[in-house]
Length: 453
Image 1 (spheres, helix red, strand yellow):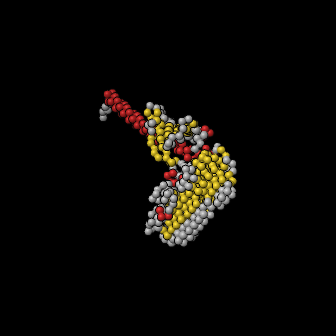
Image 2 (cartoon, one colour):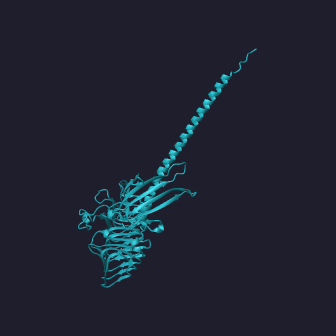
Image 3 (cartoon, rainbow, N blue to C red):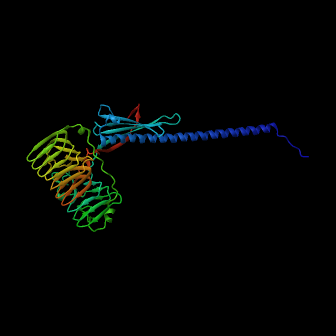
C-alpha cells in the first residue's frame, strides 16, 4: 500500500512566501510600467505643449504683421490697445470646439520704431495634472518691402500685340541708366512679366520681352507668332517666334507656377480723415498747386494746357475719376513726391499725363481701390511711376512709354507701347499699397526675471 506524505507546514509557507514575493515583484514592475507610461505621456504632452506655444507666438506675430500691412489702423474696435509709446498690443484668448480655454496669444507692434518690430507671446494651457502652462516668445524686425517686383503682373491673361517692348533699367545705377533715365543702350533683361491666369497671348506683331514669362499652373503661350521673342536679349538662346519652348522651360525663362495674386488696396487711415480739397477741374491754361500733406479730392480733370503742380510730399485720396487729357499735365518737380489712391471707376492718362521730374518711379505711385475698374494710358503719354490696380483692366495704347511697373487685372499692350521696369522698385516701391513690410530677421526670446528679452 502506497504511503502518502503530507505537505509540511514549512513547505506550504515557502510556497506562500514565494507567491507573495512574485506578486510584489509583479506589482512593482507594473507600477514602474505605469509610472513610465504616465511620465512618457506627460513628457510627450509637454513637448507638444512646448511646440504649440511657439506656434501661438508666431501666430501672434502674423496677426500684428497683417494689421500693419493691410489695415494699419490698430483700432480699439478690433481689440488693439494704444500703449502711447508708438506701440499697440492685442491679446487673443483661444478655446477648443467644446469651449475649453486652451491658450493665449499676445503681441506688441512697435510701429513708431525704425524699423518697425513685432513681438509675439504664445501661452499653451495645461489640461492635465499639475503641469504649468508653457510660454514662448519671438521677436521679428521688419524691412520695407515692395509690391513692384516685376514689369507687369496680372490676374487675367496677358495680351501683347503690335511692336511692344518690355525690358528693365535701374534709375539708381549709372551703369543701367543715364541721369536716372532709361537708355536703350543700357537696357537690362529683368523685364519680367507674370499672370496668375493660364495664358499669355501674342496675337502677332513683334513683341519683344527681355525677361521671363510666368503663368498660373498649366499655363501656355499661345499663339507665339510674328517677330516676337522673349528671354535674355544678350543670350544666343533667346526664344524667338516659331522656336521650341523647351529651352525656355529648362532655363527658367518660362514658368507655369505663378500664384501670387496682388492684394487688394486699402486706404491708409491718415487719408480717410484728410481734409477735402473739393473737385479739381482745370481746363484751358488753368493752374493749381497742392502743397505737402494728406488730402482728399472728390474728382480730378485736367485738360488742354492746364497744370496741376505737386509741391512737396503729397498723398491724395481721389474719391472719383481721374482724367488727364490733351496737353493737361500733373507736374512733380524735383524734391516732390506723389502718392495717389483712386476710389472712382476710371483713370485716363493721355497726352502729357504726368511729368515726374524726379525721374524715379518711387516718387509717383498710384493705387487703385477695388472700385477702380478701368485704367488707360494712351496718345503718347510717358509715365515714370508705378501703378497698382489689382481689379482694373489696364490698357497701354499707341506710343505709351511706362518707366516703372504695372499691376492690374487684365493688362493689354498694343501699338508701340513699352514698359521699362525700374529695378530699384524691388527694394523701394509700393510701401503704401498694402504690402509695405517683410520680415528681415526672426529670433526666439527668453524670459529673464519675468521679462522677455
